[in-house]
Image (cartoon, rainbow, N blue to C red):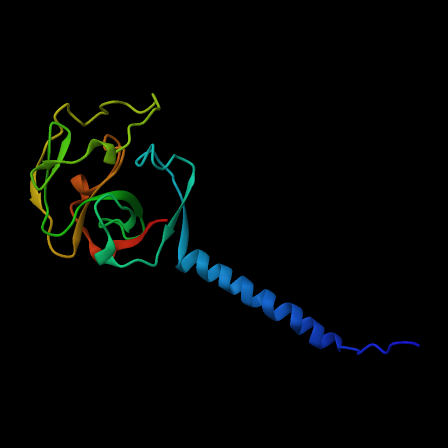
Length: 176
């Protein structure tokens, strides 16, 4: 007894292989660039949280109202829309922020120092050129639909102290 095999045309087998492959490839590309965005860390602004040369993954599916104090976000620079910055939210709309003797105050309360992990690296200068021991910033009230951001490595980082508050529309993603 010989069994007869059902011959499936080559074209049908090819479609059965290529269609799922194509759908999977397109789905992976869409997820990578529109949902989870990989970002190469080019500097020490967020050390030790994000190491220079590493890759961090940011979630583009977020709601601005769900962003909280301490969240790390990816934002477009207000000075150059082609540039991206990574920083931590320390002030939301209505908050009063000021820096006195390098200590950050939010609504009159000292920001928890553990919000900014200390770097174990000795190659980061304690007080770089252009900064002073006091490094004060006057009181600022965060306007509506804006955030005040600080880099974890505040000595080197570019953040709201130099750029001003960041508009809600400039926030691209949150750290995964």
